[in-house]
Length: 381
Image (cartoon, rainbow, N blue to C red; front, side, top):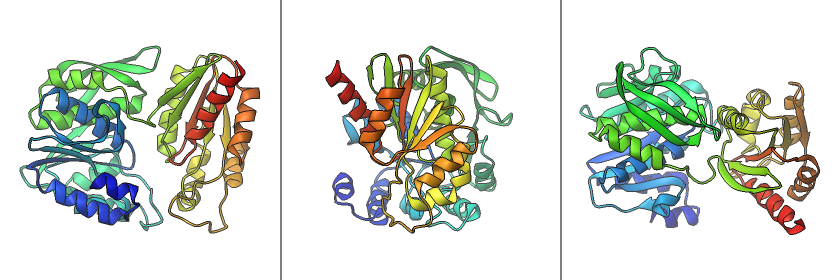
């Protein structure tokens, strides 16, 4: 029913009511919230719980190939889902365990400001019963503000905070940018973790997943096995193909913080240059976060901006992609605006060289650029 509701474009709040009713049917519903990282972390928890043979039911905002889609129907007490803050839809849920990955400014077409967003997350966390758990990122001050007075069990994790209970120590990265680290809990070594997804942001996501699963009794062994088997969700640093020794990657990142993390991961794996094609998502987000977008592309060598993906909005006439490109160029970054996907492909075919990474970034249909590039190059081989 949830899949059908999404396909029929039933409003978010109505879908969330249905999702909320589902969470009430399970004694251990796990809801993953945050401005970014929800799909990846939900997928990591899902892989761990499957490895632990808990037979969970799952609802993910993206495609997880290991379950053959975005949903899985299990027969146990466990239900794992994303918890989206847009229009406060996550307040319809009934989580036993809530994960709060980060709290930043976003969805400012609905929220007034960061304090309004924090208030909503506070309400969400207070849905957890006293014997339940909130897994909180200690690196994010907004998250820590929200969880400081909760009556339930609060378990922290972090890469930088000295007060975090769960940490990653001795982090190393392989040639693909995938991390290996020592997982620690309250200073105790818990074992080695090997990831199959790149970037420091995914180390943080994996800490959240480990903390969540350990809190409900999953062994460290199963946590390590599940994380090692997780190869990424669709549109999350997804390798689309390689042609002429040029890698084409696609990522759903559409918030400045996400873009920074994604491009840093690309930089760490690139043999040569990083060419980024960015499609801003919604006029309201683009306008509200314009200055943040301007500084989000420091790890790209060249940036191509295409038209704003309107999604649910109509063009207000006071923001456009040329303005985004100008802001980025003012930071000293090589940045151009190209409207049509076909013209972007033509530009990339002239510009890209062996060893480069082309990465399409955005929550709209920008992934088509990479697919068109691969198809065009393969035809000319």
